[in-house]
Length: 224
Image (cartoon, rainbow, N blue to C red; front, side, top):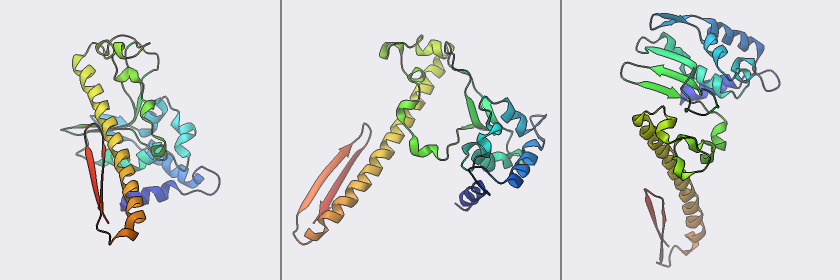
């Protein structure tokens, strides 16, 4: 929690407008240009950002509320951590076969002996998440929707494992977000009901209501 506050305070430093202090920018440029060694290679973060498709260092990275710079603050220290085998920013990943959208750029890639971690950093965007924004070509079969190119297996370079695991993983995320929204709604509803019915606390009555998602059932018993 303290690290989170520290990072947010640093991100918020500015003299005027929506961009960071010029002196802070110079400090970032030094850190971005500082070489580090991973996998017997000498690397720099600035070369990774310059190779990315988002042109983050041109403008976005210097914004006060930059999710890209937030990721850099949160994870760049791993370059000096021995247990971290590799770390890169703006790492390009394979794209779906048959689509001209280009390779996606992952904000952070971290490699340890027993796991690989891919991070897509969001700061203010978290308030605007919509389930419909992810292209259905990643998880739907051609028979389920018009204008899709090829079967799921074909779209994942005929890799049967990927064509099943990635859509299943996406569905798990959708379910998790859906349940989080339901839980937030339930908390709001229960708070309103308890507040509204508190004046009947001596009447000895009760209300039971439930809200069900595809994997969870929430039951509330309100006694008043």
